[in-house]
Length: 295
Image 1 (cartoon, rainbow, N blue to C red):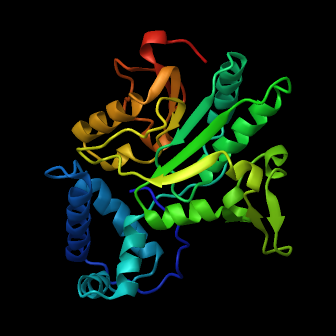
Image 2 (cartoon, one colour):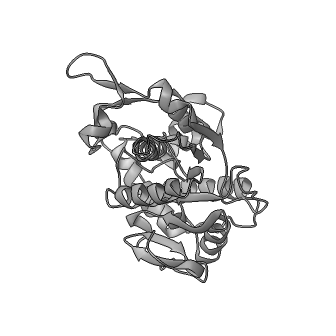
């Protein structure tokens, strides 16, 4: 499931057997079943198995079976490492760069209509996507000096450790990635050359909040802030079978305003997400079908 970025450990001699991978998939499926509240969680076991095999090797685990034994025996360090293996998605500022100009244009139109802005990063990981959305919203609002547009960004995730990092709002140079300089300059630079850190400033923090939310739960409830002008749903649906994908997509899309925009990631690009609710209008970009025009 989406979560915090984990730096790869040095490569080492690996003893990763098919049996150990299967045990990890079983453990993953059980956890997702418990979290989602449905019989099987809708998890795609083959996909998870292949992704976990890669992650285990990247992290240099000498023995996956040994890690599982220690985690199941209650060892905190092993449980933490196992959670890292299950939290395998990566994020960065300005990821999916084609999305941000579309968001900026859409928010400017909403501001012109004197409407309050709400953006939701539905699987926010360590907050990079939510904070990028906040930077874009703040820039859009700054074009309207005659009044002070109201705007807010909500970030939610299933992983509490990732949410802690999002709330802390401190990032390394590599996290900032391809963020344009005009937006990078809005962050607070700290640290020495070669060890740069970037902090989210207080004026931006006033507009952003983070909260725990499990999108896969059968008894899922929409955020109180709904409806939203734009929603980012990145690297979530790929983990689930078609029935679970449709349920999650329907729930999330139902939180959009009329003419609201849903952004997904390239990893979901081949899932065919256009529905009665949503019409594709760009790369991994959708708008509510009943008012299908580019916002």
